[in-house]
Amino acid sequence: MKAEVVLLYFTLSHFGRAAFPFEPSPITVVEEKYTKIYPVYVGVTERDIISIHQLLILDRSLYIGTSEHILHIDLDKSFTDYMTDRKSAVWRSSEADEEACKIKGRPELECRNFIKVLLKRNDDTLFACGTNAYNPICRHYKVDTLEPEGDDIKGAGRCPYDRKDNNVALFADDNLYSATVRDFFRKDILIYRSLGDKPKLRTVWADSRWLKEPSFVHAINYGIYIYFFFQEVSVEYYGVEKIVVSRVARVCKNDMGGNIAMLEKEWTSFLKARLVCAVPGDTPFHFNILSSVTDVFRLGDQDIVLTTFTTPKNSIPGSAICAFRMDDIDKAFAGRFKEQKSAVSIWTTVPDYEVPTPRPGSCAGSESFVDYASSNDLPANVLKFLRTHVLMAESVEPIGHKPWFTMTVATRDTMVKIAVDNTAGPNGDHTVVFIGSENGWVLKFLVQSNGNGFLERSIFLEMMNIYNYERCRYNGDMGIKRVTDLQIDKKGGALYVAFTHCVIKVPLGSCERHGPCKKACIASRDPYCGWANEACIHLSPGISVGYEQDVENGDTDGLDDC
Image (tube, rainbow, N blue to C red; front, top):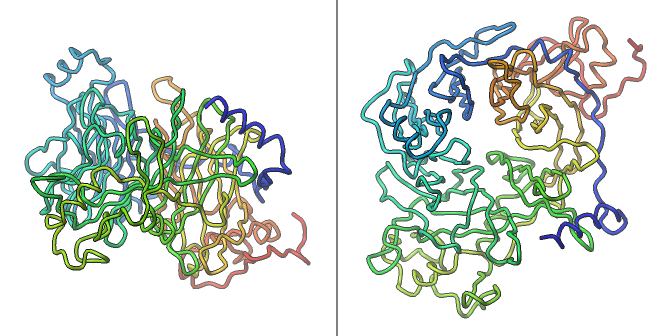
């Protein structure tokens, strides 16, 4: 790893060899004096900690999962300085659970119930899980009243024990797919399916070929698969120090597990591949730490995801945005397998003639498994191969084989969260990407495609200083400025930016800041803004009044300076 750091420095220092991307400047910088007027939610609690972990927009409501509370904000209500919750559910750990937590040696401050899962189960029901003083628990809540519904459910395998552990969860066909730490000592980290009509399945326990110290980032329901995005300690690259790489894994939604002889209660379709986000060159500069992933969206004629990557803490600071086609991800899973013959062997590619038929990792009833109604019926040699071969040989390369955008040591900031609106503007024909940073800034880009999902060019529209020191302070604690979540409310024209201690409502377009200056309004090239009635206004979808804007060129010829 020390050698890798030296190579990274060489790459940054020799631009001719690596052709490091140029970092453009934004058209507009929105300073704190403008953003400090944005409404802020700081939470309500009688105790001495607030820790926001989950945001969920459902219909015209924003639900916030925090310490000991699930909170509801009406998105149609107008706020000035502070946002207030319409209703809330108080969910505290019992005194017995808190005492047991302290006996286990955990700090009193951590022996609370931190909400780490907050999902829509159906039109009437929310599903939530909390750490519950290191004894995780889940329950259902009524959407309209936030009253608990039914009996509590054990949270092990569905919610982490520690609020600092990353986890992901989603419902697909009323089955819960989760990826988390399953035990108090962090020995069992798994990808798990439960609660629905399909059998409970999990990754193989204590097998580093399947998962090795993973940290989960996102999960996506797409087609016949569930995709999991995470980082983990590499098993194929090893040396004196740990090397962390980013992965995408895939399981079939109709996976029923193996049989009594092999993989009986475990996935028979689990495969994983490395995600690569690197500046190309003689010595590529790798961004190995995956920090955020969007849901799948359409760009041109391709389904893609956008991701944020960073460098390790002991490396040269930097972050990057990479775009991946879902077709390229699936192509990697259709490629060659990698294997390690023995514990001391290097990893090599499995020859095609050694891969059994039907092809391991496919879904029953599709592709080469068309003759198999269930994964329970798979031949023994296929299950045996799957048990020890889950890593693909080919990595998934980003669109264009390079990052779409980078920030390096010169900017002294790191991109950590991402959200996308691919129907931006009054006609819904633009794609805008919002990126949250470690230092409380939000970056806004207009992206354009050549029709094949390739990001042909991007326009750096705005850089907004969002974190509000005065309003986000809690009990004298200034908190941290790292953006923890981004959620877009299209109908309300707002971006909700979450930090540990607060949530800030940010307009999708800073149109009013241009005021009566037509030249500034047109030059902004912002799809959300247009000139109408002698002012720069926010353009809602389907707006009926006439307006002027020039997103493509920002042509201001003939317009007076202001």
